Length: 136
View 1 (tube, rainbow, N blue to C red):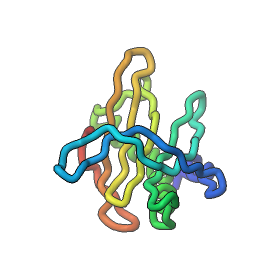
View 2 (view 1 turned 135 degrees about the vertical axis):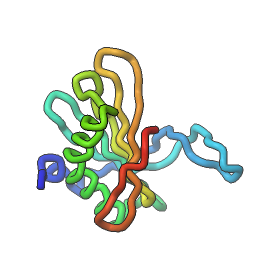
View 3 (view 1 turned 90 degrees about the vertical axis):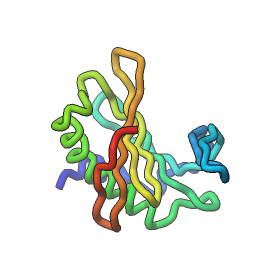
């Protein structure tokens, strides 16, 4: 078990902020809207990334906190999987955010030397199991 990232999870450091993101409207279409997210900054060497946690009525549920902790614990394995599948090159891309919802977890990356962004989605099967779903 790699707990480097997990050690940085602290409930007291989670801030509730308004963020712009894509959300599905009643018609099933995506709109760019302002939504609340619980946010925690995680340091990774010379870079840092933001852990975004789904909120309900300005609160992050214990279930989502647990999913966030699991995402941080599983992150090294997920990064290794993406590199092995040649879907990620950490020499050219850096992790910018991890979005955790009740449905799954999305890792979002930005280019280090070239402007660009992409992501990988892991679907939550149960409390302890996620499955690589695809690229976003």
